[in-house]
Image 1 (cartoon, one colour):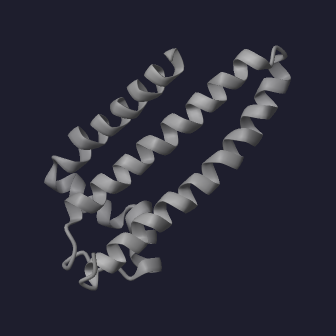
Image 2 (cartoon, one colour):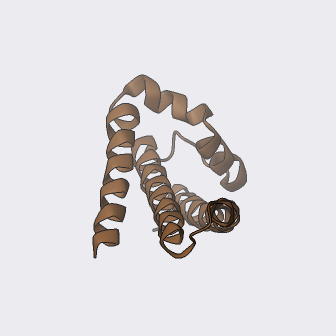
Image 3 (cartoon, one colour):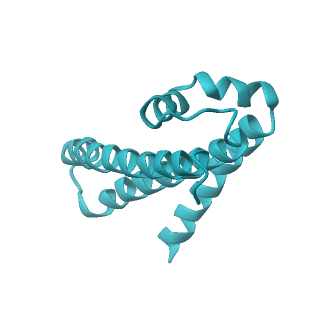
Length: 124
């Protein structure tokens, strides 16, 4: 239960950071178009920012980033409880962190891209 509350706290903290410093600032929101996340999504899924709501797209990216970061950090921190050797913990953090981070990014970003691609074409 304690771990779930810590995960929820991290998730909310990261999302609120995005909300305050990116979504509510028009200049930062416009700069997100040139950022890595949105440029990769727009190239792969042919997203046109004029046809979709940029704020909602950035909110979805912020939610997914908050989920990814909170989940990976929480699992890596849980490893510390099981592994007592510092060297083994560092190695396991690198391996587990990478093995979790890459699939989570690929899965969540592809879902966002597919959703907004359909929305842009007039679907859902």
